[in-house]
Image (cartoon, rainbow over all chains, first blue to last red; front, side, top):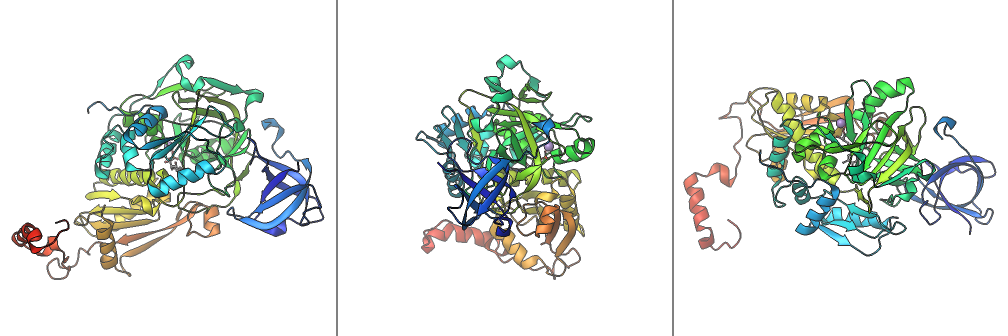
Length: 85
Length: 485
Ligand SMILES: Cc1cc2nc3c(=O)[nH]c(=O)nc-3n(C[C@H](O)[C@H](O)[C@H](O)COP(=O)(O)O)c2cc1C
Ligand SMILES: [Mn+2]
């Protein structure tokens, strides 16, 4: 099954299409890891069938946006310094 | 002082609350994803019994205890008092116990410590193994710490701090939290760890005894382990951590050990807050890396659901902020008759009753209040005279609306300390904890002639002679009135 993701943004402009973005997203897949975050490189699209995974968006104070996106997670990015891993 | 018999653990507290009808056992399955939070929220808004949720989806063996202290009845039970004790009685008891001698904690052997029944280390560490709830829909994450204590130590001064600072699960080994720069932990970080680039060992204790939780969110200058001892009348049992030198309450349900990172931050928030809003923005905040998790068999996670009144944050913080200010003002010899915060003000308004014996007394009170360690947590001080019942909002509101002179009675303090949580603050001020505060002086000026300038309060109890009052009261039913006298 395709993955469900969620992202928090202050402005929908942060989700530019047609280029690689670096985003902090959380998984909405059911199970005990739901809502855990990861930092990723990804591409998003307002066309829902462009990529397999879905991305929903929340604004600054948790409001759910009615704009829906599809997303392709390219790879995970490790921001945390290696000495803490 | 008579022997205090207060619940010594979260378990004893739940048992006492169930027995008195102040908690309900919920045996049907409850989802950690929003459902448990919604139950706790509704309980707070209705002033209902605390929910003890014994069956949590995905987490067999774990349970939740929600809204542990959101009523004065449960607060009385926590203190080992009669549940029907009045607020002034509970307040007097708090003052008595916290003015007594500090009671030092005792260290016990690991084998006797319930919190060590299960120990997760190394690759086994995963916060997702705990039933961390999504408290409010739309929150920035699942919150591990909503009713808990974050334990740290100042490495030079040696003092131990237990503080209730919210903690969000970022991933299975990382949490982030809002540790304000003026809090005890905030000061330890800026004073010692951050300038040196050193990690600060921490331990989060969840499912504390209710009095340890009360101590962790009380703005008292007494270190919290001693304060807990004073509140409960006996030493707290502590046990050494697995991965650092800190000591944690042995009877806590869950312990999370790790290090606060000095030079790396992840996102935190937004979160439903005690003001009744989600105000503070998502931001990069203090980040906690987890090294170990220990927990009791059948561990119970405590959940506070902050939002519109009234939850335990509002109830308890109003209570302890008010009483700690009363102690401070009395220590300065100010003739206060009492200090009270309505929990419904979301602990934003301090009401102080005072005998107005000299000029500027309201200003002196406001300066002490705003200038103290308590100051960043409220932005309004209202000073009324000793004839006004500070617990009776009708009387206080009447005094405010009639005696506070718009030109001389309202004093604004600018560029003080605030918090990121103030709904009325600008986004810039929230980010930098910049505050502003206001005094409402509702005292008659001392230079008004008491006989000819000060207005007379026109009330039944103030303008009629005792004889007339008695006559009217005695005849009340005979006049044909059915209601109370
Ligand atoms: C439910 C709850 C959540 C709280 N969250 C925070 C927080 O995230 N950050 C903070 O600095 N204070 C928070 N507080 C307030 C502190 O617990 C309070 O200031 C306490 O007295 C800790 O004080 P200390 O820093 O003087 O030890 C919270 C209080 C409650 C009741
Ligand atoms: Mn403290």
